[in-house]
Each structure stands twice: as structure tokens, then as C-alpha cells.
Amino acid sequence: MADISLLKEKFLEQFAGEADGVHVFHAPGRVNLIGEHTDYNGGYVFPAALTFGTTLLIRKRDDRKLGLASTNFPAAQAFAIDEIAYDERDDWMNYPKGIVYTLKQQGIELQNGYDLLYHGEIPNGSGLSSSASIEVVTEFALLTLEKREIDKVKIALLAQKSENEFNGVNCGIMDQFAVANGKKDHAILLMCDTLDYDLVPFESGSYKLVIGNTNKRRGLVDSAYNERRRQCEQAVADLRAEHDNLTLLGQLSLEQFEASKHLIQDEVVLKRARHVVEEIDRVLQSMEALRRNDLERFGQLMNASHDSLRDLYEVTGDELDAMVDAARKVAGVLGSRMTGAGFGGCTVSLVHEDSIEAFIGQVGSEYNEKTGLQADFYVCSIGNGVEQLA
Ligand code: GLA
Image 1 (cartoon, rainbow, N blue to C red):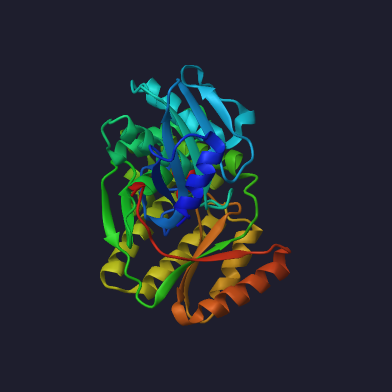
Image 2: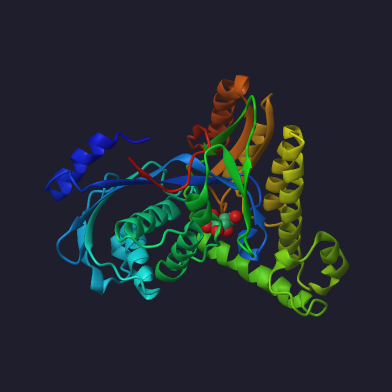
């Protein structure tokens, strides 16, 4: 957790005035444990909030402006609340701007101007949802200070809408949902079609979740992500010949899929659809494994998830594969997979606590030999969703 008194000093350096009236909020990053590329297909995901994320210091101001600054980036800027528009040059500031814009679009017009200082602990481009974290903390803080209704499911939906429409990123609901609704020591079983969810205690005993950052920028991710979405829609269109009301792949069981898969003409589309349907089934199997406290089985399902993302969905890439291969060779590792959209970003592994040092050493050096890149590792605890700090 960030040093709040230091951040308050920085806030006053940036925006002057008094520390009175500065409120502090925090939203985490997220890691997805299993259920990848299933959210926009209306399937299950199983993410958890991290203990690190974005800290936001915010204070009302007297005009109708939004003052934005970050400890991570140099430029600070003020925007007229009534004239907010997307501008590529505004970089990360388009996330908070998008929230204000989308709130207004939904009939929630801010009554005040605000100064906001962000402090981000999530490495950019790591696939741990730094953008969702900024969006959700901004929305939660503004709604709180404007004394509006706080409903974390609605907060996630509006943040997703802002990312889709204002920022032009076609993401599903998982990231914003996890960042808003996470709970310490729990993962979230979320059905993305209905948004029904369960907070499931993640009791991994002497095993820890270790995140490995490939530090490979996810260059291809946007175009490839949209292509995968289109391929899933194609599969649905083909399958409709036998399933009239089908709108999302996640509405099909594995058995139904097996019985109808001949309807999918294109071989690549068939692979994509198979991944989605089997991955959703794996999430459900992993819930059973957790209920039995069978972490070994949970780890096998994590492995199967990665292999399917590599072979059928084809979103892993050399760096993620190299890191996962290295991880699986270490004694005490029950499972290892990519997490998030893919093409770089992070892996998540379930590692015995006595093996963590060896894990970081071995995986780090084998990964470096194969890719020339330096990995970073975070032994992660599961934290709370968005909240106001005292
Ligand atoms: C990104 C998106 C999510 C989800 C994952 C893949 O993180 O933002 O909505 O689709 O990729 O599971």
C-alpha cells in the first residue's frame, strides 16, 4: 500500500491549498485465475483483486474543472467538465475523462469540479488491469463525493462502457467487475452473461499465487483481441442453424457443442469456439476441485487453460509460453498459465511456499536465456475491491 502522507504532500505540491478535504480511495489490479477469453462470450471467469493497484487523492475545487495529475507521469492538466472529449495526446487521462463523460451520458452530471492525483502501482501494459483500476477508482470516488448511489455492479458496467466507447477498447466485463467487487482472500466466480457472482474463499494453504511479468509489451493485443471476438461471433452465427436463440457461445454446454460443431465451417473458427466452450467447463471443474480442496487438480486445469490458449485460441506468444514452460519444470509448482488478454503481459502460477525462491531464480534465468528479457515476479495476496481509505 502506498505511503498516504507522502502522497498528500505530493497532492499539495501539485494543486496547492489545504490537506483538509483531500479524500483517499484505492482500487486494485486483478489477476484472472482461470476462464480466459470467456467474458465477452457470456461464460464464467474466476478473477481475484490484487493488494496493489491505484491510489487516488481527490478534493473538490471551486470551478467546473477536472485537474488531473499522476505520480507516474509528468504532465498535469485541467479539463473543463462540460467539454470533455477523447484526445489521444491525453494518454492515461482519457480514462478518468471517459468516466466523467460516460457518467454524464447516463444522466449523472457532476455538481462540482475536482482535483485528482493518481498513484499507480500496477506496471503499465502488464495485463493486470491498470486501466480498469483507474476507471473504477475514479467513478467510485466521484459518486461518493457527489453523494450518489454506490452499486459496485453498476460501477463496473459503466466503467466498461467508458472503456469500450470513450477509449475504443472492446474489452469484456471481467476486469472492471473484479476491480470493483473483489474481496480479500476471495476469488470471484462471475457468470458474465447474467452478472451473477459468488465470492469464493481462495484457500491455498502452503501454496501461493506467483505472478510473473514477461515485460513484453502487448503490441498486437487490440487487433488480435477484436479478431478473436469476431471469430466467436462467426461461430455463434453458424451454430444458430440448430440453436435458434443462441446469442453467445457461453450459452452452449460442452455436450451441445460436440453435437453441433459440424455446423462451423471454418477450421480456425472451430478452434476458437472449442477453446471457449471447454474453458468455461474448466472453470466449473476448478470450482469442484476447490470445494474438495484439491489444489493439484486446480493446477492441472490452469495448465490445460494455458495449453488451450496457446493451441486453440492462439493468444499466448513466445514469451508467455517460455515463462510457463520454465515454471512447470520447477518442483513445487502445481500449475502455470497466462492471465489476461495474452500476447505478453503476465503469467500466474500456483507455487509451494518453500519453492518460491527457487521458482523466481530458475524461471527468471531460463526466461531470460530464451527471450533476452528480464522478468519480474510478485508473490501475490488477494485484496479488496475499490474502497475509500480512512
Ligand atoms: C482482457 C479484457 C477482459 C478479458 C480478458 C481475456 O483483460 O479486458 O475483458 O476479455 O482480456 O480473458
